[in-house]
Image (cartoon, rainbow, N blue to C red; front, top):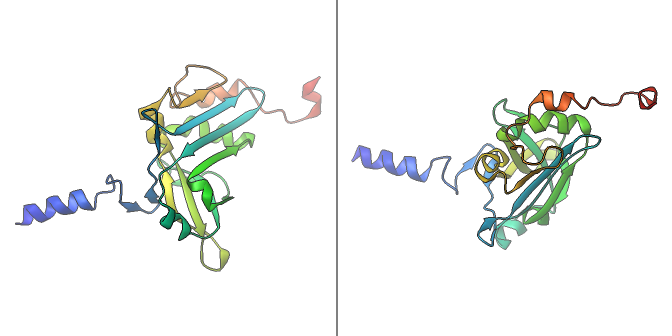
Length: 183
């Protein structure tokens, strides 16, 4: 009897279960189009720095309507258990169909070598408008490992895997810190 209860608790309450809720919220299920998950991640890191993700999920209308109109997103590094940047505002409809972009050079430099560990977290504002309360997430790192190269596009080095970018790849393109360096 005990082994049966252990099995049920491991299966039903496992963080790997699609319905499981973690400290990052509940995983959003991606919509499938032409047999492929609806997610694309595109990035470049040569003269300009940009990281963008577009996606379509299957979040049910009642769940979406239960959320406040204003949400926020951030990237979370599972390995180091830290968020990357400040929370950025979005409207709740962007949990169903979204395009999220960061073109802050420092953010892109930090996140590209860590794509294999990233989670895209969607949160509501915490009590009294402070902090964030994670509600849903998309496991970017898992998608990087399982869906690359079809859903990840490195525009600087086409064909390079999303989890193979090293800090040294970015060092070849140091940031321009003054006008004098342009001459």
